[in-house]
Image 1 (spheres, rainbow, N blue to C red):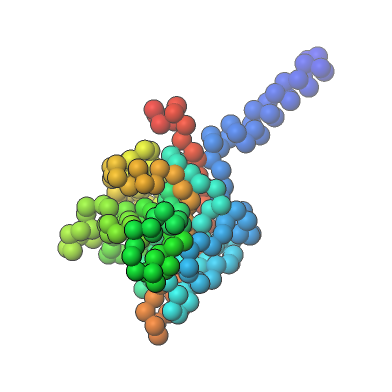
Image 2: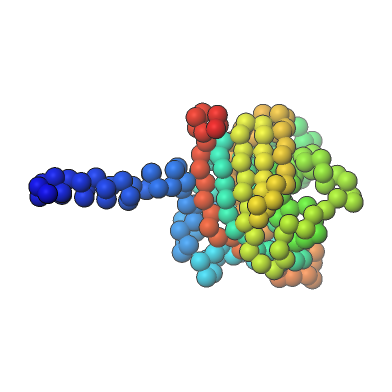
Length: 239
């Protein structure tokens, strides 16, 4: 074979196999496995976040309100995947399209102290994370005043066992316009269409929650790893 032709073919093949854009089809890692680069604590919480054994570990602090480690970048329509392991006694969650409350958000609150507490509170749709049997994967309106957005958990008898307690669990979340779908370990969980929450939160940060705990309990922890996201374009939405 002609040496120049052989070299050309080798370069083409190498480029085809090694091109990250082709290999991951738009997926971007949100966690490098070593640092909290690209993340920042939002809201009023004081829980501690650190990287331990290649995972982001959040630990409760007695007396702290809910704490959120949020992506610096905001996202609108996307597919998100991560692995999570949560203490059996800790309620946690993954915020999507969320943000801190602004002066405009709290302008209607008459009580001055309540208004100050509400200002900068992180709020928006939350994908629940908790031990089985429970409501993991359903959508809650964190600090929105609406409670559960998903209808299933409004039934006090409702629960599922898709979470493997004390182990790593794989979550998948797809947000397209007003529709939010979730899966846990391959099991479909939520399929919610909510125009109202989409209008108030069309885009926002991804947030990893460490829930507040009762005084004298804990400490409890929750860890995340393999966090990646793929923004959905018009073409991807159609598929």
